[in-house]
Image (tube, rainbow, N blue to C red; front, side, top):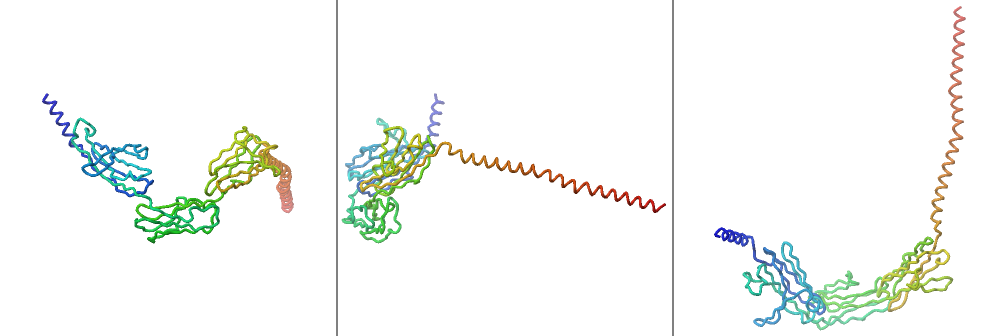
Length: 390
């Protein structure tokens, strides 16, 4: 029995030696936000074992404080809580669509005591806490001129920040979420302008004037144009009995809310209705429409196809000419190449056959005859020498 107690005491001492209380390595930071903005608080804790992290909302003043634990999905889904427990504890709380009631103190709590959540026991180690304030204020009023630009060729956009006590460090403009470099200003003035000398589909969209305050204050001006509809290719080719695919894109703001296709023959336009047969299939998104024609026919499918894109300001269109080729058309280039190869081989063969007999005759004349002539001359010289010796 004494041995058992000794072993238990030893194990307890080893656990205490290896265990360490929780401690913050990153605490949440206080923030000031506007109504309908979002806020995010971060918290990181170390300890052995890895501590548990909780988020609480503190209402009221001491000693009448009221604590409410915040879970993922609280406040009608406007609270999102994420946590990871790898090597150390990391947690973040994300607050969206802020209201004035979201103002207050947010508390990050951490503990690695095994009895931390026991209701009948007092934990040996208390929860450690780190707090941050989130202050939600009314959005300052920004007067825009004009409120929107509709189908104009040029415009001057202006924003005037009124009834605000927030210090201004400068301003700039954004176009569809991207910074307009030429608009950067460090002037501490509540008024800013942006000149659009030529408005096209590429310069349409949402413009935001941003005043560099804490928090940032911004307002949006929409610049609207007719949809700019264009085709990938103005001429498409397809093979008989295959599929023909034609695509139209749209650029600008706002994008089309409706797409239609027609076939034009001799100036007569026939609407193509999706789903009425297996012949045509139309798939459309706000910025693109695709017409697929199944089982192409040379007799009925050749012609001009027009796509129409319509937004709140009007309609634009573009045209594609469809050509349908016979299935044997693809074989003609191959057959032409084969014929050229056969003709070339035949020419080479005939030329080689006619050239070989001439080469053999030339070789006999140049090699054999001189040898015979030299032999006879040698015999004659020999006879002459023999007579002289007699």
